[in-house]
Picture: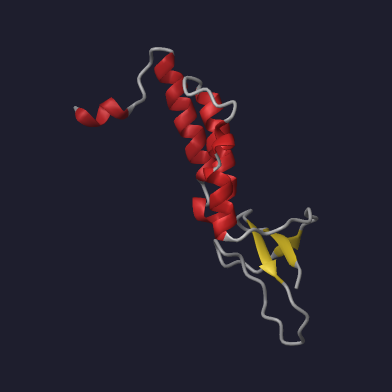
Length: 121
C-alpha cells in the first residue's frame, strides 16, 4: 500500500498516511489538530527504514564527519540530520528547538547572556 502526504489546512502539519484501496476507508484526519481539511502533496518516493536500520545509521562514526564542536551552526546541522533520522519521534518542534539552541550558543559566543540567568534572581 502506498504512503501519501497531506497538509492540514487548519494547522499546517504535514501528515503521512498509509492509504489502501477500500470502499470503507476511514476519513483522514490531522494527527495534530484532528482537522479533516487536508490537501494531498506531491512527495518524493522514499524507502522506509526499520528502527534498527535508522539507529545504526545514526550511530555510524562517519555521521560526525565535518562536525566542528566549536561551531554552533555545524552542531545545528548535525542535530537536524539526527532529527530527520528520528522522524516523528523527535517531536513536532524539533527544528525550532535546534534553532533556539543555535541562537543561544551564538549569543553566548558573542559575550551575551542566554537568558537562563534571569531565573536565578
